[in-house]
Length: 390
Ligand code: RFL
Ligand code: PHB
Image 1 (spheres, rainbow, N blue to C red):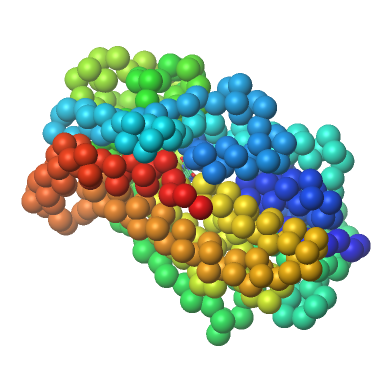
Image 2 (image 1 turned 135 degrees about the horizontal axis):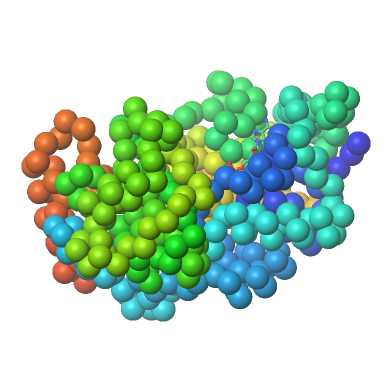
């Protein structure tokens, strides 16, 4: 088999890249280790930035997103038992974010790919990338016990944090920066109306909590838990009880509880790979970087990488210029590090860190108080949350 761009991974990064390349007339094949249903069953991001919205439109798959997505112009910060709204729209000259689940975005992209009958191989096992330091890279995989080989011009590593592409880059050419946080997020999805019409990020003495949503009838909640906790040991009742203890009296009163549809624990990590290019292989999305979810930046960063990478490929094929490919790493990393910093800062401001004692809570509350009462500080928060310009 031969294609122009072989894409490893059918998460949002791989699917979006495939669709944008197809629209530009560039052939691509996507290889995915799991089934489509498995990819859709992973409940992850909920908030998308304008960059991501624009890219879905550019890819021609934005119709349902505009019908069903909820536009949010602010968030609530809860600390010291009281809530304070950050008016992101007002502070950024009219910018918003949108509540549209990663599952829905992925489904729209998968549906489009199927309708256009574009090649995607699910359950592609033992994917291996090679010869990307030459003009003829290769990707091999097994499907139903048969070995296959794809010859291509470029490889796009969109295979997430545990993927094979980054792991195949020569160790001498790669530098990795990592911080692992001493807690995780226990998340619960339920068919219940959200407790508030915007998101609530809570700093409480019992730890961080987040009240998010997927629609007017479906809620997503998170509580910070020690890394030693097991999801099986958290009944739905125990979750709701703990969440309530971290909320303000009004939210506690209003919270509608119900059976969970999904419950899982995610570890928190900051991670960046430099560079994102190895010859004719390019990393995009979680394959190249991870942020803790506090700033809602992971999916949005993946979208930005894809924007730069698709433009660079289009420039290569249409204009015979490699300028975009040559500056890909540098352009992405400049934005990635700013989102990494914001996510690290917001995580530090909102969570309990073991062993840091009560003074840490006081410092956080003082900073939060400053943040919500200073227009300058609120603006910094708002600008970063809605997404820095490209
Ligand atoms: P993905 O989604 O991990 O997809 C990678 C795909 O590659 C496949 N794969 C392979 N395929 C073939 N061969 C191999 N060897 C392979 N190895 C892996 C995998 O099966 C998978 O299908 O990466 P991608 O596309 O880069 O997308 C990144 C996003 O998924 C991620 O950044 C976000 O979910 C992060 N995130 C959030 N981001 C936001 O922008 N806003 C949010 O509100 C937000 N909330 C979150 C989040 C992540 C969370 N968790 C669970 C870490 C909330 C949570 C709790
Ligand atoms: C979510 O809805 O899953 C979500 C929202 C905001 C975040 C993280 C996750 O910061």
